[in-house]
Length: 367
Image (cartoon, rainbow, N blue to C red; front, side, top):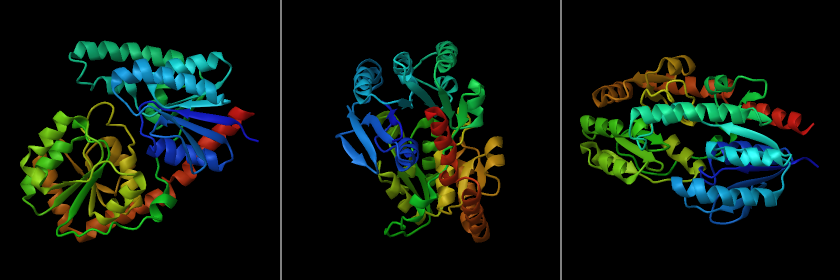
């Protein structure tokens, strides 16, 4: 019998794309006894993964001072051989479990020191810089005590730089996407889609403002969770909101059905440090759905996604509107971008191949 494994997250949703759909399901199919300790309304078993519920409440204060304690107690009760955690706030739990002789994997989804520099709730730049530096030292020191570090990109892996670090990238599960049919929904104009976190630094308002410039010739579909009510209200106050259809936060597999019905996928991230060398989920999912893409014109993305998108200045609604309009008029370019993206994910960017890195790491850890 293979080892008992427990994945832990206090910040991510129950059926997170990376944690549940990619990693946990792959580990379960390999025969491991796997539990996922995560915010949920109930305990259940899904695709061979035992979901062990934590409270849904997710405020920053509650996660740090209450939810984390509950997670630790339940983690002890599960008594796994390997603990694989996904949030930097869980580093103290990882250290405690390591002292109990458990094998520990820290899965680093974001460059957190860079991410801290964008946090507006830290009111002053000097405070952000100080917190970033302190956390950077803390994270690197803690990581030395864990058995493995998993990073989503080479850029993040460079921060740790040791033989225990592996890169497991956020490539799409092609088999999941291919089994989904396009959404049966009426369209009376071309559709640009964005599915994901609806935040200021992901440039959502600029895309909404671009819809006003396009004056109803294009519709924007938004799917996902808002950063906060204030930012949601700012977007809704834009003249472009009348050309937006917001579908809320919906299950991942259903998201693909909307993508397959849309005409263009957009990723309009601002050029903050944590974005310019990131590999977000979304472009790979658009590519798997054969969607032509419009993306922020970052040098790194121009290299990785070359031939699959047209670039924009993410803070310039006029430029975004112009590129959308020009691309929709160029049927040949639309088709070529979509086909190039689909070919790239099949040849190089699928979870079906990427998961082998994760599974080999588990095999070596269990020896």
